[in-house]
Length: 73
Image (tube, rainbow, N blue to C red):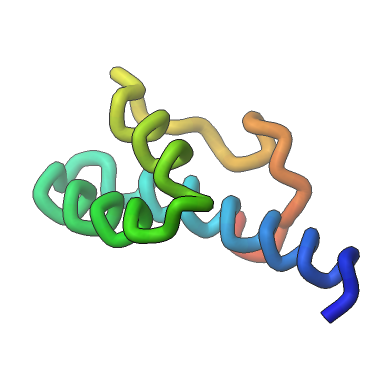
């Protein structure tokens, strides 16, 4: 896998995590379960912690500088 492919896949996954967090925001039990799964990966644990500690629903991934558009509405 090339570095650019890995980078694009990382952006896609980050976008998916942020989008799913936003979609699950009102269902705190489902949100907690989802973020618990995300935390199993050391790569994404910090992102999960940041999203969960946010007092308001996360913005669209592009707000966080995520370049991927694959999982956005």
